[in-house]
Amino acid sequence: MASFNKVILVGNVTRDPEVKYINNGTAVTDLGLAVNRSWFDKQQNQRREETTFVDVTLWGRQAEVAGEYLSKGRSVLIEGRLQLDSWDDRETGKKRSKLRVIGENMTMLGGRGDGGKAPSRGPSNQGQQSSGPSGSPSDAVDSFYDSGPSSNVSDDDVPF
Image (cartoon, rainbow, N blue to C red; front, side, top):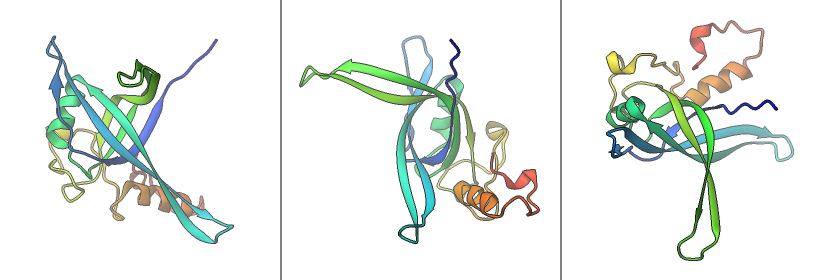
């Protein structure tokens, strides 16, 4: 039986990351990520948008970099896998569960003015990508897809 567990998200950090260290000295941080989806609703003849909030856990050096350079509002690309956490609720005794993303790779997007405290270039930001002139990574993706295949879009215009 084949299986594949891969998640790629681009969104904005919802709270400043706080790095913690477990007993063996490994860094861990939990991020909140807001991922927006927009579309045109033909029935109501208007542009619609929804936001999904995702919990992301980063380990090791990725967690330390997130704690140092990410802050609320900063755009980030996360590649990782889904993990189901299950536990018994202490108050009700019922089984609870929650899906989270275990981040395996993180790429900071945007620049200094994008809600983050990271410099626009530097050794800790290798692989940092710019979202282009529109400012928001989702705007760059929307403009890429809205422009159609006949436009002159270079690989540098794609935010990932």
